[in-house]
Image 1 (tube, rainbow, N blue to C red):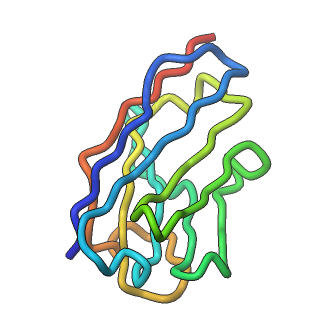
Image 2: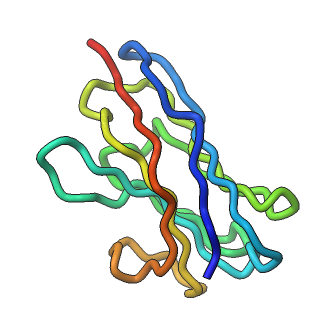
Image 3: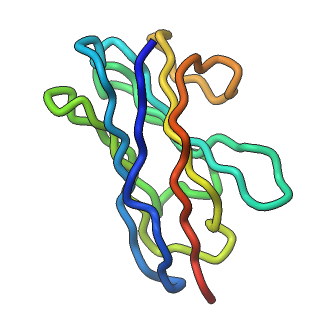
Length: 124
């Protein structure tokens, strides 16, 4: 498995932007499909975005499509989530996850490695 550490969360006003980073340990980062999930207060954890090993496939939840961008830098063992036009409903703990599958997966049970999360709070 790979160890994941998220960073970049914080407090931002509605309409603002944040960029989350997820640093992975190990030398096999490029073999993992990476995903971002989030958990809002009182809700189940939900899929946000995922990017395949080779950047060939990217997929977003409808709620963030057009506002969020997922990317990865395999040389830096890091995956990013650029979040623009943030809304109060984007407030959540954001988690980075990794799966050995080559396919884009949106179900959290398919991901074997998780970070501890980073808090994003969007004020109205």
